[in-house]
Length: 443
Image (cartoon, rainbow, N blue to C red; front, side, top):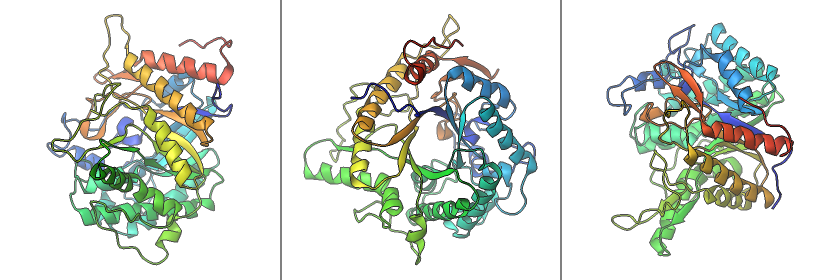
């Protein structure tokens, strides 16, 4: 196995707008579906909202300085659509656009490469009132939004991802009802998944004329493991992989939906849709957190959890990142890949010495990077790794109870504290980029 990652490898962290920015009703920002959903009683487990979150909107410069201290050379962030275009169509908000100008320029001034995501789940509420992603017109509005952002930032941003995790947008928000907008309808969820993919293709086509930046999409993918050798468990594993992964990979790279049965009906597809979805892309971002363990027994056979589970209840399974990457690399003709998210929620707290000792997170990152290196050694073209997340933040339906960050946030004071994992990650990156003999930076 090669002893190091490629010399031009992107070492980064990732965030999303609603989870960190706050300033929910400031400087002309419009209302998003998460602004609305998080204020519904019972929607968020701890009763919190993202109104303030990490107050990143007001702490931009000092937060960017933290990236320098962390030693990363790439940063993945998302743009809040309602901050730049409050109604999702029509007038643009200059103050919102200026914020992302400052963010991109601030990264470049610090030697950090910007990677932007256009949609990380915060649809303008006005568009939701018109049907949201179930309304095909939203695809065109999204393409127009993408074109404008690419025109505005595309001379400085290295890569634009159209969507983050279409599966989550469609299924958790419209089938399971645990994410915004909180709907539970299988047919609607299926059509939304299709429209999100369609809007991706329309946006890529629109952006190609506006920027030379790399264009792609980010999917949450998981390998599936049958709990036993029974045919029922094997079938369940294949069905789960089709539902979560192939449902998005197949349209993007094969121009069809998978034939394997899924718990939702197939969407209505118009002539030309699949060709649009198949617009050539420069990269695919992969968010990997856990494998899907598939058991048909009652009660189900639990996953082995040899390395434990995260605070989210997810099995920690580093080998899965290798299994997933090598599997899809065999089965699909893929563009360059990024691990656009990979992280773990731990029970972090400030110790008596004023530090955060998160040994579980250090082991998590180290083991996953080891498996990632294995995949690269076998020819999988992975160009970068973005740990999720830079800082503790608003973890959607879980509120502030789950801490994924390298940086601890004390929410009442907004005090930032580097965890042990941040120091470890900084030193790991330093060794990979510059060699073990290079003097390590200090925080």
